[in-house]
Length: 97
Image 1: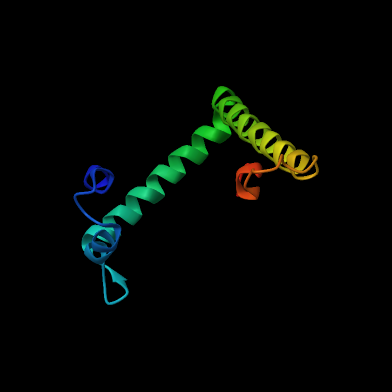
Image 2: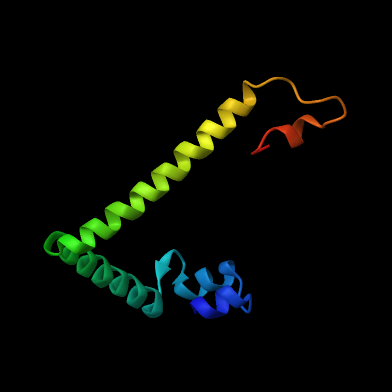
């Protein structure tokens, strides 16, 4: 399913339709829900018991937070900077516009 969705062979809307009927999950949808709960439980148990795993997740969170800090710093410093040179479009001056 994930491969078909990634490759564009099936649309997300059609996939959701296959997994539910009349607002209730089909057998396949129910199976995916149970699989997700198993995966989540295993992840939580590993997180609680494995310090290396916690460190790995913490490191990734730190990288993500640093990237967000950098993006905010660039955006707000550019916004407060001198006006763009003549001929520049204002949208090109702002990094996320």
